Length: 84
Image 1 (cartoon, rainbow, N blue to C red):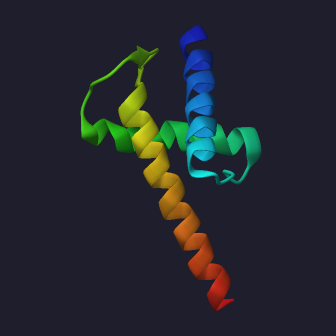
Image 2: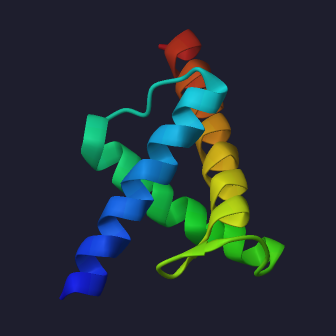
């Protein structure tokens, strides 16, 4: 149970940090940051397991995966907004 809570906390922090690096807010606030961090960890897992590890997250691949996710999401939202 505690590992699940730790997973949520680390995912939220890494999602928030990726948003700060890009200067973009993740929609959904804290919940959006948690979701972005967890999905970013999945995307980052394709980059390999390197760098420091917090809980089950490798920080650098997760951060890069979350940045890619936010960039893709913001691009899609911008494209949808122009067509509407």
